[in-house]
Image (spheres, rainbow, N blue to C red):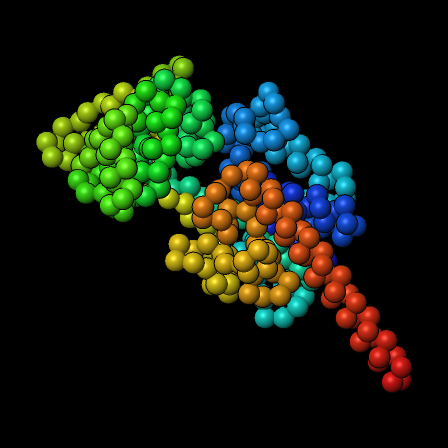
Length: 322
């Protein structure tokens, strides 16, 4: 099956790109992977997406975007892309079920997966006190006790941010020394609301009927188990961009995020565009992902139009020669 445009991913970036391309009569095919709707489907309340003064749940927001894309003529297909051949255009996509697709242009919006600890109680309480986004969920923990797990710059930044809401923010890290830069450590240590539980390994997220109540840790110095009370636990141990299926064919930064030409969504290969968290190591918000999806759609639309014009000129020239 051949398509003018294929979008890989159905988070805010991919579905926004689908809406714009569908409205441009390009009828994109959208491939949704193992987590349709992306990370927002694990978020209970979304209060910071414009246009919803009373808030909206993550799954409901993504379902609305999906319906809007379908309404304008996008096609959504379940599946997982395992490999892409960029050596010639049209590009060839290989699917997990053995199928193949070709496309004149490709938008990659596969997102980034928050790293998890893999401890008991963690997965069960995502959205019920366990979060991977301080900016998204900090507001819900006013005057509560919060734990931030991590020792890098992201953990320090999120701990600082969360002190705007929480009564106490406790940083838990498995080592005595932090990986964060000195200036970030100094800022966090200078904040009276930040407490420290270093050299402790998280063992289990403890929860009750109303949600998270604490974190069980192993004190690496004493060998004892401790229970740290908390109403919320924020994981700040990094993200992994979902780019493995690309086989290193596109340039990335040192953390694995796809690189695009500044001010655009264009990658190093003409006709291949990237949007959303897969190319955003800084903001990682639903609204910024949606905005970059719009950019990718407009860039792809322009590429398709110019490519079609060039083909018409070539075909016209060949006919004239004949």
